[in-house]
Length: 356
Ligand code: SAH
Image 1 (tube, helix red, strand yellow):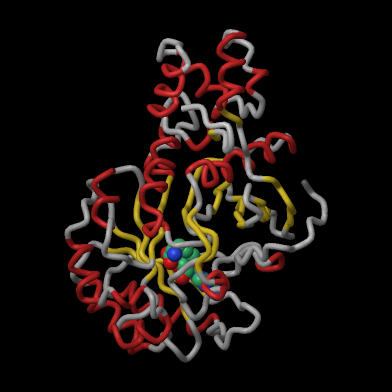
Image 2 (cartoon, helix red, strand yellow; image 1 turned 90 degrees about the horizontal axis):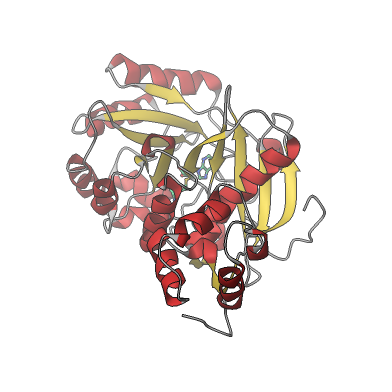
């Protein structure tokens, strides 16, 4: 398994892949557990520091592999406590991830791709186009960086929830996403339960039900329009899967007892925020076990959309609630540092201006 040109990044490996590597180096498989704990619980970045691993294994591992975290190019801190990281990847690409303070914990918003192919008309990431998929180690690296940041700050609140709502479309990077979710769950590693992880998708046919069958996360769907016609205008990529068909697929989505699907609905003034849109949405969602999370549009320079007034947002919410649909309004955080929903763009080539 040794590869001289591009060494293996240990954070890219599943537990079983790590076991196989260790066996290939002539060691018993149970040593993998020790190495895994160093990687994910002790945030170790140097194989030589794995003190309870034999010197011989450390040497052989160091010849075959490295531990590569994303490089922190910039840290931006919002007045509301939200923190945005610009992360440099090994090939010079960059992504952003966001750490959001909640009442008693932190939530991290993770990216899954460099750029995005979905081309939603209201989203800064969509304007970048697609560059490449992120590896499991790069996705998990965001969690490691966030954990280390909180540790360095002596922050008492812990990182407890993860949302895959950063840059990219998770279902278009499915194999790496599942490896990432499996690593997150490992009890000797980061040990996140599925209730603490949400994957958000604009809705792609391939792998939607597969993800449900893994039971590794809950699902959120970026709906944003109550009819196919409106959806095509604002989400041309996602709308390739027609709305009636999306709903039919979601009807088969395996839900745990008392679980429902979360539909995200982005309110764009004059586009999809009328009473008639809300009523149409109620009709559409009557076919599934749904709750709705309303998102007020966050302005992105260069895009033509506007925020609806607070009154409009509440009126829209009331129509859904009156029909028995649990409807929350997402609190926007980090807008002053362009860290709010839809504002992530990670301009590569941004000068690294400290914070690392
Ligand atoms: N591709 C996935 C993951 C991105 S999640 C998905 O579409 O679900 C990011 C969420 O923020 C999505 O619901 C997205 O539609 C929403 N969003 C995009 N641009 C936004 C903006 N300018 N203001 C508020 N929310 C936005």
